[in-house]
Picture 1: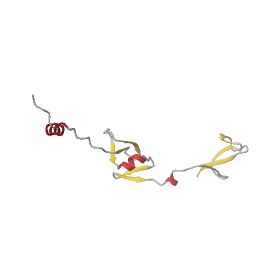
Picture 2: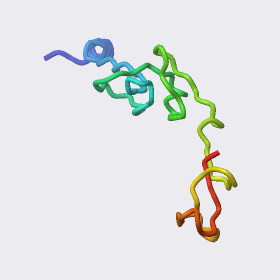
Picture 3: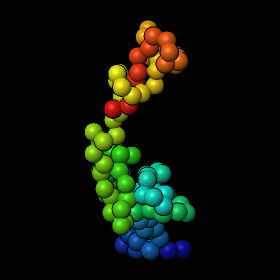
Length: 112
């Protein structure tokens, strides 16, 4: 019977140690560059590798262009309904959700 010594223990430990799998962060995207998901999994599809901070933020206000991440300006994405006297959709003066005929009293709304 072999006696387990500290030297034998460390030798057995080092021989049986399993190396940790590689850690990677990916942004999967469509063909047009729009993001699908951030993940640490190996999935089928188009992806680029991103750093940990980009992965943790997980912004979908980005596009992939030439395999590089491009952040979109936020002001270009924000649109809101505003009254417009010349063009737009005719709505009830009391409720913008009710579309009315242009021959009755109305307020026109359009996206700005």
